[in-house]
Image 1 (tube, protein in one colour):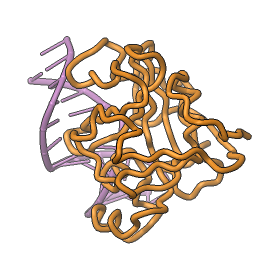
Image 2: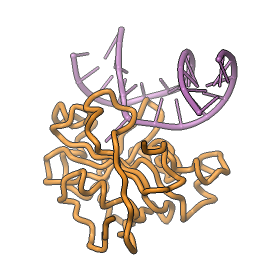
Image 3: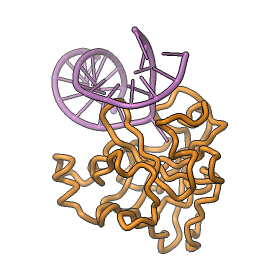
Image 4: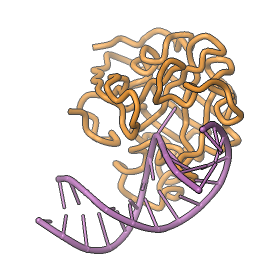
Length: 188
DNA sequence: CTTAGGATCGCCT
DNA sequence: GGCGATCCTAAGC
């Protein structure tokens, strides 16, 4: 059980922020909902984009915390991370799933789907539903477009191994909202 | 319910 | 030239 009544601390290490983000509300231009699944990545992590040091693609990860790191996945999907930790440390939290609460119709339109459970159940789906593009890479989360609001009450957070990676698979850096029907995949 | 293949791009070897 | 922090569809059991 966690009481995330405090303001966001983007200086926190990625697993801590990843846990804190569960239950908080994230909107992009008024579209989004409650974050129900995240994953932490940092510089010492072989599974992280920042592991091999700064490049043109991961530059935002080495920028100031509290900004977005957006990358193209498999040449198709846009995925959203929130940069955290000390500036230049290459740490970020991947937003993997959201419980849709605001802008449902727009999300359905963008996703070409009706089923609320599938609108934001996965990082690529989150990107599509919220309208994330390369334009958002490096933008501050406090910018006019983004809104991040702490969870209102207690949140039961579960965790486990991350998904879709081949390195550092034992690091239990995936976090989720217990019992949520909007996860990309169940926790075991 | 599980698995396999294709789509499609930027970045790194 | 190869390979993903993925998703969707179709086929198999």
